Each structure stands twice: as C-alpha cells, then as structure tokens.
Length: 471
Image (tube, rainbow, N blue to C red):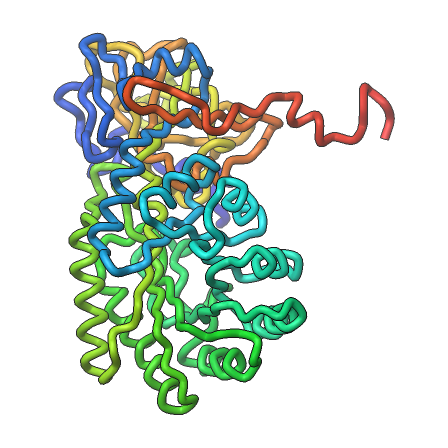
C-alpha cells in the first residue's frame, strides 16, 4: 500500500519521540554542538548570536529569517584551509551562496565551486577571481560553457562524453584551452540518504570507472587538442561521518590514474576527492573535525599512491555543508499551538511557525532531523514533546519532527532552528506564494542583511497578467 503523501512521519505514533531524543534537564540550555560557535542564551533566556539578541533581529528584520554567524562561518573555512594545507579547498556554492559569502571564501584563502551559470554570475559579480572558480554540473548548457570560458573560469569538471564534445568545440572557437577534470563514479555508495549518495552507479553524475566510460572520457579529452586534462574528480555522497568510503573510492580512482598514465601516456597531476563531510543536526550526529578528516584522507591517498607507484597528485576537496551548515539558524515566530489526540489516549503538540517547507524543505525531502529552542525568553515550565510545522498547505510541511520545548510555548514566542546554513536558503521556494526570508549576518554585536527579504511585489513583478486583466 502507498504511504500517506506526507510520508512516514504521519505513520508513526511518535508521542514518545525517537529513542535518541532525551528529555532535557533544562529546556533553556543550548546543546552546544548543534549551534554556531557564538550562540548563547542571556540571563533573560534570549538567544544571542554574534553578540546580537535575536529578539532584536526579529524586530528589525522580521521572521522567518536566516541568521548567519559570520565569525562561525569564517572560522570553519579557515580550519579546513589550515588542516588541508597544500590542498585546494573549494567551498561548494550550492550549499549556500550570496555575494558576502563569496567574498569571505576568497578572502579566507579558499576556492569556490559553482554548478550553474547563475552561481557563476553571482561569484563573478562579487569579485571572485575566475581562476579560483571550479565549474561542476551534469548538464551545462552551451551558453553556460561559453560564459565560463569567456570569463576565464579556472577548472571545468566534465560530466559526460557529450559535454566533452560540446566543450572542445566551444574552446576551439574561442581559441582557449581550459583545464579539465573528468568526474568519475567509483562504485562506492556512501552511508547516507539514497538521494544524496552520489558515487554508486545508478545515478546521473559522472562516468563509470567499472564500465570503462571514465577511461574513454579521458581518452577523448586528450584527443581534442583544445582541452587540457589535468585530473579526475570523484564525489561519494553527502553528510558522511567516516572516511572508509573514501578509501575504496580513492583506490579505484587512482587505479584509473595509473591506467591513463600507462595506456594513454598522460600523467594527471591533480585529483579531486569531493567532500560530503557531515555536520551535527541533532545529538545523533558525531562529525569529525577538519584535522581528523585531513589526517584520514591524506593518509588514504598517500597509502594508495605508494601501492600503485604513483606520485601523490595535487588534491582538492569540497567541504561546503561543513562550513555553511552550522553557521546559520533560522528564526521563526510561533503562530499557533494545538494539542492533537493520537491513538491510545496520547496527544501530540503541534507548534506552527511563520515559515516551513518554503525555507527548509529538507525535512520533507530527505526525512531530515532538526532541533530547535525557544529563543525569546526563559521558561520554568516542564518541557513537552512537540512537532514544529510550517504555514503551508501541506501535511508534510514539517520543520522539526520531534523536540522537547517549553510547556508554556505560546503565539508570539520566537523559535530558532540550528544547522540550517546548508541547502535551506539554496532550496528555498515561493510555494503558496510565500516570499523567501532575509539572510542577516551577525558579528561583534552588529546585524546586517546580506540578502534582503523578498516581498509580494517581487513575486507579482514576474506575473505578466496585470491589474485584474484577463489572460
């Protein structure tokens, strides 16, 4: 039988919560690993991030609002840069990108990975040097490739045999020789959600090593005369907490490096390992530090190169989520609180907020778990298990499936959801014609909008039927 359209969430009794969720000794305390590094509660119980009280952010900028902790974001970027010294660290723009973030990334010594012409345009407008940009994507258009070559993008990651032909034709016409990596699938499936595991064979990205497609792609790039093959690129998934998958994938990719050198007489100087490093969304999650990741990954590469008799190539990684994810929390205002009876005489508390799946679709899309906290005051009332839901006309519009919240939560209170920096704003939509939230950067007691809130006027501006006229 087909499940409820809203998903398995509505098939669970769930009134006791998941086994990993513990009732807090003090509902006012933050679970520090889930929050950005400057987040704290003041004596009034108000959440403070970057030295700014979030009730003041709500008053000035409204809700729902993404609150971006600049110091946290930049410190995480610097930690990856330093831990992976000698490696090109690419910030994955798809996680979250705006002009300010693009400028921070470059100022802090990172490269920037984009996957569409729109991301590329934003990066260039922000002043990112094109040679520090890598361009991914499984179906880049002719216009996007022309734009990348005309602006001097540093590296193109080709994803198909058709793209090699397309790119070589454009490069020849423009009389340029772009640096190219071939994206390969190494036959390794990361221990993560099916839709974000990207190295197994049955998916849209890359060219198969086992089927010989990746070798053929390398042969064709080398034969073009207009493209410069510098290496291979592999990405095994997302929200990954150990390096075991990287070990097998690296072995397969480096074996292909060796075969290309032997059979095609081409020594490839570079290797892209991808990223997908996990973050803590709830107490279930135990991410590794950048130093631990570096030790594991660099050790794997050194070991496999030695076994194959290869020189260690120049490496690149892409820790997008691991930089952006923990740096943002989403601030909401509570609109309604209701008790809904469940089977067996239990009840579930539903807390509705002024956002939802239009600003965070990951719960609905990936069955993702999140936490949250009362952000505007203290509470001395016994906590109750609650479900935080959005304002959209969908039963699956759930923001936080289960969390212990103050038992006296009421309309007008502020709630904050941590770890919403990766993919929440990037995946945001105008479902039900809801304008997308502002992104407010906070640091050293100052708050500034880096992306302004959309308005209804913004939405109507795209609608070509004016003033009640007939279509």
